[in-house]
Length: 263
Image 1: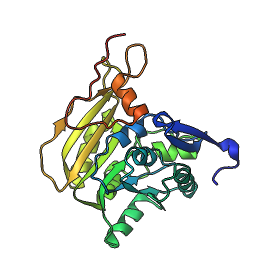
Image 2: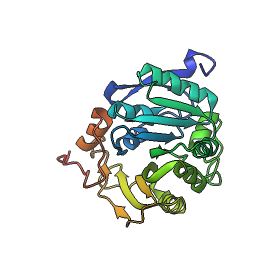
Image 3: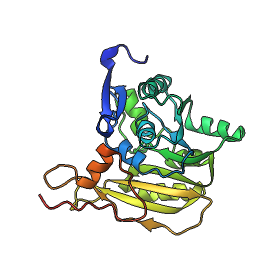
């Protein structure tokens, strides 16, 4: 097991306790972003979905908990983190549905396409910060998870490589990089882009966005009503609570605004 000892790792829970997640105490730690991302994935029963940038498995485990009819392939570049993802898969009884592959995203995606292996969907939580804009972190795991080792356009192109035609690529990113995300999707052959803003509160601009594009589809872009995460008193809205604790899907076809009364 990775790390110098048990003190290096903690066991946490997502989806109201349905998902057990062993993750490092220092470095990247899953919060609500991977849960929201997993809730945004739409796939037909029996589909194979690629999790590009698996980490300890937060997105994949939440998706498999919500959708027992899916199979996932997870790509993780760090061998120690890939080992923890396998431990987490076994702890959540999904080791038979999560295929963890260790290597860089570009290398594994290329190997998949060379072998004629394709997937129905891709889900990814890319590093949010460009190398030029980020200060170096003293924690290697946090640096690797938060700062791009390759350009965003390269990352998304690798994600799209094994994706079948008409397949869906779903990702979460910073709202202030939305233009980079959309440009990268188009360059990777993914259009019909849909953007779903995530507002911290109703009166605060979005800091995160969920974005999806379809490979080989030339449909128009859509800006959806989005999701308000917190009420004025800091509690999660009813809509956010349903997604984060109860495993409700985050729909792409209509409004996901909550109907909470003001606090």
